[in-house]
Image (cartoon, rainbow over all chains, first blue to last red):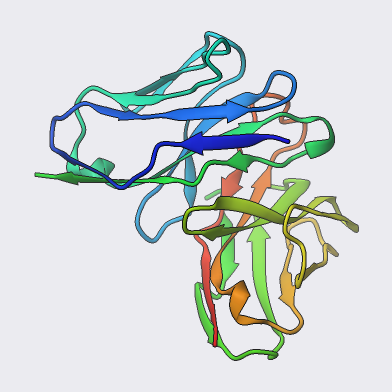
Length: 114
Length: 115
């Protein structure tokens, strides 16, 4: 079955540091890949997405590239801010019999200090 | 404003006392689903509904029921809650024909504690 593995957290960084959160996946076929973000006390929001190999998703300074050869979709940001403190989830959608279901990683807590 | 709403946001209850968590969306989405979020496990799908009167089990349906009598509402029912159902619950919806560009819209979450 499908699965998503994220790097262990929590991650603690100083403001303006470089961020990488690793994500690898196992899936049948050609999944679409997503990063969702959950700010404290809120639901999940789509941060970025990529639907085919070598696509780069980007939003709010965050980027992730769909690497089929390494089955990865690592999240990066060049200079984090305190407001980026949140939980980040990598997810995939592969369609077919899993109609509608997103498969999520375990989530990575990011804390950014001033 | 397009949104998914859930009620209540916080609930503490006792084992065996039936409860319902409501979910409503105002985007005319056909597809709705329920997830639970547990530390170290991410989000796991409980049930989903592809349209009115059409529901099916997700990965962790045991102990839960759902109904879909109207397009906008998708309540989650715990007939006899147990402590292992203590979790953070999210309702989500998505537009029809989402294809591969597949954004789901999530509610704010309901934190349930069963003692």
